[in-house]
Image (tube, rainbow, N blue to C red; front, side):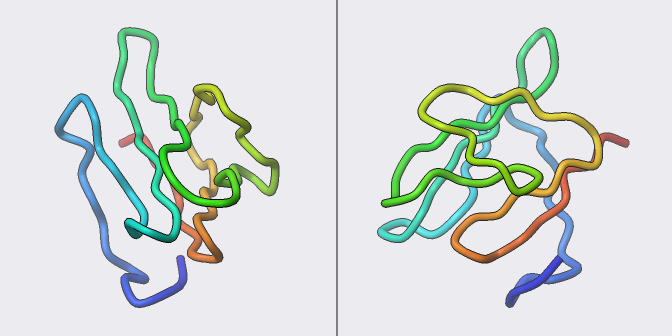
Length: 79
């Protein structure tokens, strides 16, 4: 939605997909039997989903959620 990769689409074809910048903030999106979840991996602050901190555990994702990693916003879409 913003940043250097605005407009870029990343297909989640693997069970685990990492997003973010090492040394700054990293999260992993996991595909499981009941859908997708996001978990904090690295960084001083937890990622935000729809403006709310995801905390230390796995956070279930829904179609249309907006992820914020260190000010870079991206949309999570299930197609």
